[in-house]
Length: 344
Picture 1 (spheres, rainbow, N blue to C red):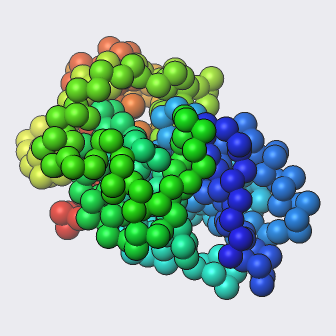
Picture 2 (cartoon, one colour):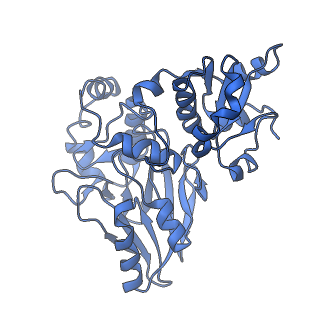
């Protein structure tokens, strides 16, 4: 298998090529480089077989879905990824074929809940979980420093010491490292206990990434910032949450809430199904369709999506428009179905 880095900048995207079949995968494409990727594929006579996003990016727009549409290639992300139009939802230890070669998925949460690393022969593409002599931050977008420490030490650091490490970002001019080097000399990890690491990561005091408003929620929803006025992170943090069990009890009460499912229609009717009585209003249509909900401003409303991320955006939008009693289904339809609650 042949590998190349495509961006030659601080954000990395990787091309993996099956020599025998001339089929290829691209890992972590940037939206503003899509034309470059298509040109590289055409120049080398490659067929794009697969696109992998290692996580929901917060500092730049992903090019995965646009590239997938142009090249007719499926996008793979972890099953906890919030974005619609993901063709392959992967789980830990799942294998993906690229021609006659195989990529293996490692679920490595911590930077985000949906973070994965991709193991390919002698190397591992670590996304934003493990950097060269650093680690990705864990203080927003569902990050969890303890989970990140576990992902690195219990999964990535159990790989052979000679395994090459290729992250999705590098800010110091590095191109690769090894598991041995990161075990011995990564300043955030070497000699650190789990509690040491959590304390360090929770006190970095870093500013939010530049352009987070223009990247994170658009990547979560596959909508451009110009399509929808996204709520601020502060507004999102104020959204009230309901667990699947709490929503079940409310539905069975004498005053059940109105359920608004903000997924795309193919998701609403897809493998996860939908809750009986849930009204489908895709997130992109919500602002222009609030007139349909005008008589519900004082009624309890629960917003629903795949994993509770797009619906949190919807709940914040509705709250900002004067709806007084809005909640979000935490964990979305994934949590509802895993609780074995009924769906249509």
